[in-house]
Image (cartoon, rainbow over all chains, first blue to last red; front, side):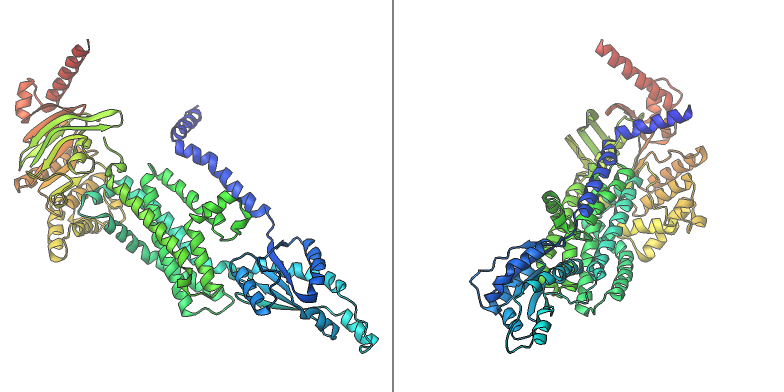
Amino acid sequence: MSAYWIALRIVQEILRDRRTVAFILLVPLVVMTLVYYAVSEDEQGKLGVISRGTARLFEGDLVRALEDEKDVRLVTLPIPDDEADPAVIERRIREMLRLRQADGVLYLDEKLLLDRFDGRQGKLNLYLEGSRPTVTALVLKAISGAMDDLAAAMPVVIDASCSAACANSVNNKAMQLEKHYLYGSEDYRTIDFFLPVFPPFFVFFFTFILATVTFQRERLRGTLERLLIAPVGLPQVVLGYVGGFFLFSGVQAAIILAFVLALLGFAVTPAQVGSIVAVTALMLVIALLLGLTLSFTAQSEFQAVQFIPLVILPQVFLSDLIWDINAFPLPFQWLSWVLPLTHANAVMRNVLLKGQPLWQSWPPLLTLTGFGLAVLAALALMTRRKHALGGAE
Amino acid sequence: MLSLEHVVKQMGSVRAIDDLSLDVPEGMLFGLLGPNGAGKTTLLRLVMGLLRADSGRITLFGRLPPTDPAVPRLLGYMPQQLAVYPGLSVVENIAFYGHLYGIAGAELRRRTERLLEMVELTPRRKSPVGQLSGGMVRRVMLATTMVHQPRLLILDEPTAGVDPLLRLKFWEWFGDLRAKGTSIIVTTHHISEASRCHRVVFLRAGRVLEQGPPGELMARYGSADLEAAFVAATRGAESNSAAGVQ
């Protein structure tokens, strides 16, 4: 019978805490939705095909062969059909790759057929974005599948100047695929795509948890009230927290960084290491401010703890950490824009995988700074309303 | 020292402070008495600027509003909760609060020693506060509240959960502090122990029910102790309001 009363008491308490009820019911649905979109959509590379001169004769065959490949989706590139200058075409292709309008572009230039007729293999140019090894692998796999069909579509060489043996060797010769990487090289491994985002992710994750719980404890214990009536301003409280956490998060970040540098399959410059440290430090401050602010809105330690999955889970799924955000419906893509980790991940990959200097990532850095300032403003507003502390008789 | 004029504070659907006026002269040990929910803590939070009054006027030290930047250094506050850091030692807790108020070095060490002596915790100076008994933690709190030598000390239920012998000790310390020039406002629902105050106020439903020196109030209600006087005053008010309703 006692068990009945204990159960009843628990039901009554939880039912009266609407936030907890909503949390229990909604979080599994949100997580399942995210998992559904993350894993149900097979990843595809975006591939463009451009041909010029006599090579245009074979574009149709190649496109048909590629359409049968599940690993790529063909995209049309906005390059004028009458643009014939190879240098201009190459520049435009690189621009399309940089803007991620395509992950790869297959360029059949006018020399393809001429080379074949001259008894050479014939060359296909494949331009690859290169910073996403999994997508690059999909594009390469699809192209290799379609190459036989393209070779079969090529005219057979029957020429008096070429003996039967010679003609046979050319006709059966696979075409040469010349790869041009916009970023990185063939050596990039799948893990190299994920390693750069580890330092900001782990520092954000642990600092947020520590800040949320520590600040909530300070609040419930009554020590926050004592801080607020002491001659201590909000900037000093925030700076104090940043300083206190910096030591631990700094050591943690250093360990993660050393681990990442040891595992990365390519050399990293001191400037790149400096950029990782700068972005990780910025994420530490943002995690701290967010933890303090959300702690203020929680009425109990339990409510504060609920913020941890609410803040962390969407960022795991929607920040381009593991899954491509383009696999998610539009509302989730909009949501990803307001998640700080989305921008931190973009900066890290720009710096490490694309080899860009830090300043070139100014849009995501500016967004991150704006996010931090907005959270700071919210925190300042809340601490001005000191009665938000609650607990008055 | 502290003056409240027609102060009103609504907390949700409850009028926590209802047109309350009060004067606390300097150098006094002033008791704020009332049952749970009478508005004692709300009143203290208004005085410290943690809450803003809906109407009325509060002035401290003759002319300062609670939000004046000079006020924090002149106020000491000991809340009901055990508001110290359990992972820090007794001395570290005192030092932390000292540093917040700009006290450091030899001066901080001198004050710490004196406070440890006062609250009789010198032998436990290095013990983590989390390992101390409830009564000892209350003593640590008093020490941390006094480290910046405030002119006005606000104590919210300082003897809650404290054994009777230690309660007596606390009241002795309050008397010593007052004798050294600190004004003290103390809330308690151990009403009989407030007879040591120079002046007490009986609060009920956010209003002043009675106020005056304890002896005078006891005489007014023909009671042998302050608690009996408080009960008589409360019952009188209840029967008056019941008559008013009828």
